[in-house]
Length: 336
Image (cartoon, rainbow, N blue to C red; front, side):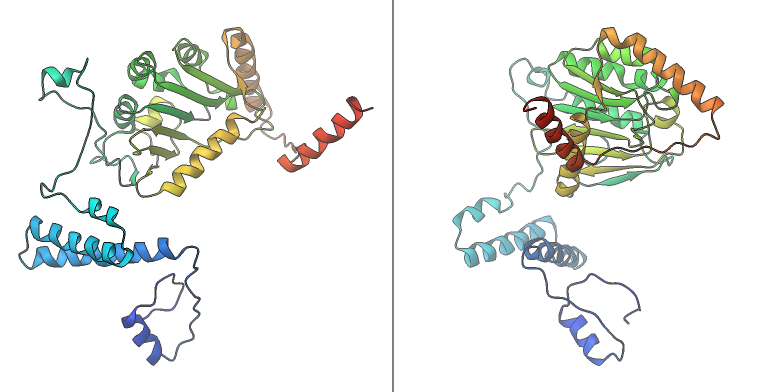
């Protein structure tokens, strides 16, 4: 039975038959040719999953399911006449590759039973962290993401030493092994600990940018992005700042996004981080900035406690307006 409301569903033969006999009003639209491959592939994925479950429910084993998948691949190869599709057939061994390392200078070369550290949650399927008892804690997952990443970006409103120390050993090992770490944070509410920023500054291959003017930069986003050259990039986006409570016992919700199933979302996360990184509101933090940061944090705390009823209005140009202003300035100062 069709219910009233919104849909975004491919009309298959079954749905077409129902629409032909219903007396309800319907709104339809052609499949966008530019999006057709994405829309149809998701639809086919649903059908294939149902088909494979059916094979299993009728007594088929893993081999039977693999054979069905390979017949689908063969059909696509025959239709496209592209022989390369044959390499996408599932190998007879029916296994998943979980890790790959050089043999030289690797503990696995000495002991094949040595544990390979990886997140408990999938790096191929997105998931949600709600702090439930059956879920791994955020900080334990972050520790495992850090040691298995090639490059890391972090975007947080504030950084507390109580939270940073939970993952500091892993960050230290990561950066000393050549991994690049970039961090964007602010002096918002005076919550950041100078000690935390200073400990991060001492790490090699680490770059920190800080917004000191939180009256114009309202950064409340929290994101931890772990890039992997294997293509299995992951990102945690949600409500957890880098504090002990937020990473352990707080009622925080965080979505884990993976490149394998949400590549567009990962691209948007990466692009937005890059935009913030190049925004002049965020300034490089260096050793000589310690006193400035301490003053900004103190000022934020004072403002927050003494100006609860003060309202301000910020006026800043959009990026395209700033470009025009820059050109006008160049005309005046360079060309007179």
